[in-house]
Image (cartoon, rainbow, N blue to C red):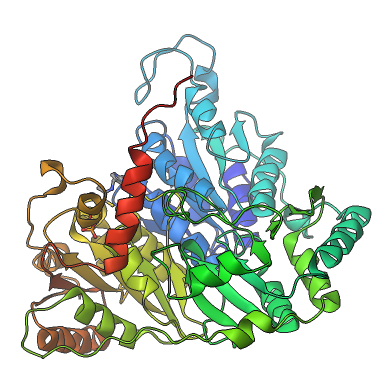
Length: 558
Ligand code: DPX
């Protein structure tokens, strides 16, 4: 059998560790899908639509390090681009692969289906360029290997999504085979002079400071520097706080752990620690409006050292050209101990007292029971909305992972992302906490959890509307049509699956439902939790007030 462009792509995707790729079929990608199927190292996994396909790949990349989604031209790819924007915001290497017009139709004046009706087809790659770190169009076989390798290598190196479009007649075109070696993983040599200077400047900055705190940010994981951050925390012996978007990215049982720094919405004491420290070492933070609680909690100035994935700013100077992991590992060898902040403070995770078993289910009781489910091998995915605030109060055992999409914040992300995560990490206990409003965007992907027998436990918070939006700015647009959420599982099973839909309106009912969910290993279990519309974490109300104030700032006079 001769080797093809599609086979080359398949071999390269398998080479970077993909055991699955996600797909929605369309006539521009059918020949490509056939070629990908010839590679026995990878399984093709189907999604209900391309937005979900992109988010499933995003969730898979969280579990597996990288992912691929294969879609058709325009009608498919433009939907998937929303999820690719999410992967960019969340620093995940997702390769979006789109089928494209036949190479003979480019530049010939032919009008094609699934296009905007003109005769020029570069608009899709132009859109993709704004949302990816590399984008290539394959219209000849000779340049395909270099383009495929460039796209994959850049995505891995930058931890960002990349885009590839393949003319529909090129997937089966004859192509050379990839050679052995690790060309896809190569990265530039670090600038040793700059690294030494950054370390010296950091040690000078640290010398007079006693009350030092580490603040862990959400890009630490993508920078593959979590271990180095622990080594630095061990060496300094200081207090460690995490930003909300990074909860779970630093072990909560570490002796230095002092909770979530999120302004007035964070853990008690964390704000005071960070804001009274004389040295705050910020590890790969993202200080956006949500993270800073409407710009009210933003460590800045001379007391702050910014250690970003691609460089360090300290003492009024910026140093670049080396990776964060290397910088932190070397700093962990040379830094002086700074235990004062850890000695002065303590941390005990908030404990929720059990509710009366037959009392109407409250948000607190639901959180208490979900918190008790978390094991070191749990991956907890929490949707944008009140779920963010719910999981902030849960103590994570070491090893448990928390998946959040706080930068992009697309409601509905979590359902396909949890599906993708479950495909990438089937050995972990997969738990999803999602609001009713968010669920309505992407609910059909639960059908794929049924199809692929993923035992995801879905807690569907039926609080009758957009509660977080009500906290920010209320109005009639925050109410939604109620659904029979638990009843959907029968619809998705269609007589041939093992999805289970349950309802809980009291603590006792929730306990019974969780026991049934743990016993159901052959498919998802959706537990619809009936919660009053006004019942949510108090921190949400505080946070919402500040974010609303930031949103409502009048235009500045020019
Ligand atoms: C919107 C949000 O029911 O959660 O916990 O009740 O808030 P809560 P729900 O899932 O409602 C979500 C809702 C409408 N955000 O409160 S967070 C605006 C929004 C968004 N993403 C997209 N569209 C609108 N974040 C795709």
